Image 1: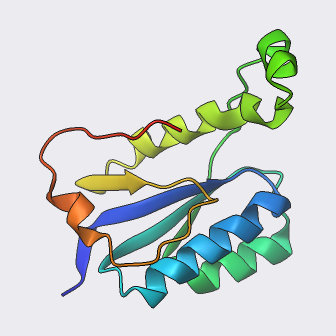
Image 2 (image 1 turned 90 degrees about the vertical axis):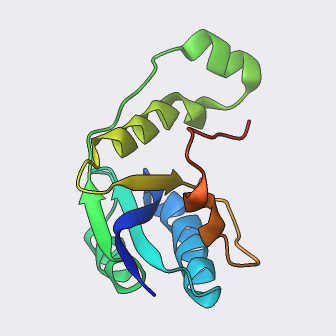
Length: 127
């Protein structure tokens, strides 16, 4: 039975990350997820990808990019793209949902994971 006040959420900050988000969204659909599928996008996502995302996700929500500006540590890690990971914090603004499960766009769902919504406490897994 569909649950409309809960959502799986992901983030796509550009067209390249949209590809992963589309695979994630379709994998959730393939596993018959019963919650809404939401993708947060930034202004850098093209019009074409927005249309394609709207065919897989129930909601496509544009958010502002949050950049950590921590260029020294990002250079040390050799992962400059991680500077915008704080943009995920926009998930907390989705107050029209009673509960959200955030999944990185490079996640592939191989079995139904609706039971994640049964947890009563805040839960997280390290990256």
